Each structure stands twice: as structure tokens, then as C-alpha cells.
Length: 193
View 1 (cartoon, one colour):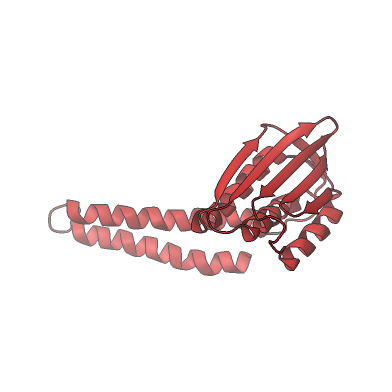
View 2 (cartoon, rainbow, N blue to C red; view 1 turned 120 degrees about the horizontal axis):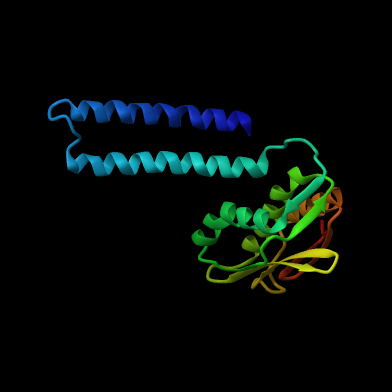
């Protein structure tokens, strides 16, 4: 991932520099960029920043930073994972309903794996649902545990992607999380902090 970030960020930085050079050239005659071009330059700057932000967000979930036991905010991690997956939902016209209780803290043996694990749980649901379907994501505290449920409208006939199911099972075992899968529901039970 570090190599990919480097390979993408270098051209992004070059584009940003060339954009500023172009802006200076456009200012040469009058001292300011013509209004008709300023809008285009601003849009290009915003897109460069958007791509960089998406890369940064995605890398937070992919880059392995070493096992670190500790407490983590499941509510925040779930919200961030939903941000990573938001394009998938929009692209497939899937209605996403979110009910995330704030501040649900969990204790894990490896906090660095949580983001990627959550993306896998969400990806399972998005892959199972037909265009126009729905996915509901719930995070709540229940006594000594925290529960994350991802429910989809895919029904019994929808197939689970085998690679995603295998990844969920492996990560759940590594993190000490109870995983319950059945058609349309992925339920994860975490020890609370």
C-alpha cells in the first residue's frame, strides 16, 4: 500500500504543481486569473485534494501497522468504514441505513485490523444486495459486549462471496470477535472496554 500511495501521490503532486504554474501564466497579463478559468482551476484543485483524501482514508484501513492490543471506538471505526464504502453504495443505488450508538468502546488484541475487518463485513452486504436494495448497519452496547449488525436485503437466494466470508472468519478469530453469519445478516460481538 505504501508503494501504491507513493506511485499515486507523486503524479498528484506533479499535477498540483503544474496547476499552480498554469495559474501563474494565466495571471501574467492582468495580474489575476480570468474568472472563466478560475472556476476550472478551483475544480481541478478540489479533485486533486479529493483523490488524496480518499487514498489517505483507504490506506488507514489497509496498511498493517503492527499488532497493538487496546481499546478502540467501534462507533467511530464503523462510521469511517462506511465512509470508505460509500461509493459502492451510491454506485449500486443501495439505500444505507445507519444506527450507530456513539462512543461504543471495545477491547481487541490487535486494534490495527479493525478497519479492514469492518470493510469486509460491509463489502459482504453490498455484494449480496441487488441495485435498489438496502443495507442497515447498527452498533450498540449490550452489557459486557458491543454488537455490530450488518443486515442486507439480499435474502436467502443471494450468494455470499467465498473470499469475503473466509476473510471475515479469519479476522474474527484473530481479533477474538464472535462472528455469526446467516443469509442477510452479519453479527459481530466484541468484548467491551
